[in-house]
Image 1: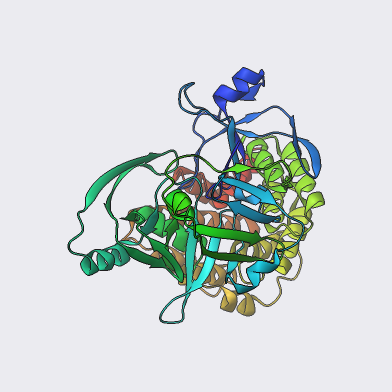
Image 2 (image 1 turned 45 degrees about the horizontal axis):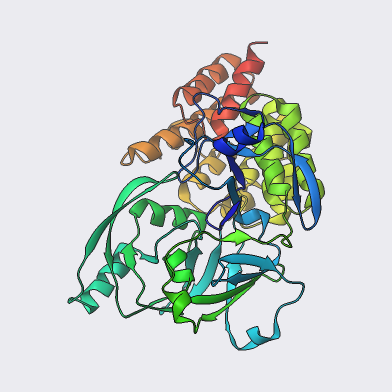
Amino acid sequence: MVLDTGAGSTCLYSPATERLGLIYIQPRQGTVAGEFEMVAGMSDPVRLSSANGSSKLRLPVLTLPESARAEDGLIGWPEVRDNILVFDSASRTVRSTRTLPPETSGWMKLKIYRHNTFFLEASTPGGAPGIILVDTGAPQGVQLPLSAWQDCHTAHPELPVTPTTHSTWSAGSFTTQVISPPFISVGQIPFREVPVENMPDSEVDWIKRAVPGAETLGVIGLRALDQLELIVDGKSGFAYLRPTTSSAVRHSKSGNWRVADNVQLNCENLFVRSGNEYCRNGNFASAIAEYSRAIELDPNDPEAYADRGLTRQIHGDFSGALADYDKLIDLIPDDSTAARLHRLTLLRRLGREPGDFSTTVAALKDQWTKNIGLFLAQQIDEKTLLASIDQADEALALRQNCEAFYYIGLMHLFSGDKTGARRYFQKSVATGVREYSEYQFATAELARLTR
């Protein structure tokens, strides 16, 4: 198993599962993955062991040809991020230590952004927050957003530019332009004689969505990470780093990072992934049980509460869903927009006071979500809501239609108009935006209306 700090979950490769005699289910036909995500199958329960014991759980399985990978699979960032991790560039091994080594007192200290991939927070010249992705699954050196890469190229016009094509499972095939300047810094982190290439726009957009409001500074891949001594204190949320003094390590070009036996694995993320797979296949009771196991392991895991709440709502357990949304809002009050909207609809459905709609709407960040809140508060009508859809962006308009039709259908349902509710739920489902919770809710509402 190799470490991929850019991966959001541990998974096995299909050749390894076949070699080990493990049974796994192929991904369901028509399953939709989000951007920079992979559609995976799921193994039967297996026992995963690490320094902190073992857990019996299901693991995602990526279907690959026999010749594609020498490894058995990868360990994702969520499963290791709570350790104190020492990255040893010479051996490309990550090991755990009980206490933070004292020598880090003189090293650069950067905050870790809590996410399913390894993001560092760094300052920018203007003082705004900046984000750096550390990706041990990327063979490149440094990747920069296009404008920053162009600035680097302008500063070194004498350097040759080499087009390079990459192919990844998550982003597909893309071509970048590579130069090798004598010196480059990503945020405050310095590198020497490392390949520098432009990031695909899709990757920049993905990071912007993952960390709203922060400036994307770049990606540190394998060849750049070789130039650093890095220690991550996951419990306190900080990383400590400094340039390595070893020239032999600096120019290393091959080998993947591996996880030492003393690293403890967090399994709650894997139970969430298993729950998601059960939910996609309509096995809601098993999905809820998996989310509950994740919450047992980490009672403050917002993702587990969010997914359990959504599944309970699909399944028709509205009181249970409301309790999960309340807990989620308590855990992440500034990043729980969807939960707040769903909570308002559940309060109406359960015949309880909705609370202060104006306060809730004021807390919503973007205008489109505010419009949904205003509609639920009956401060604008459905015609006004539909007119506010962004028609200039076809993909965005489709997603907003999915949401708008669902919420309009709910308001018809609450007023006793089942025919109107059915019509709008059907329109929401007809958008085909399967990855949106509103699509799943509309599908569930249609099923309830036909019983």
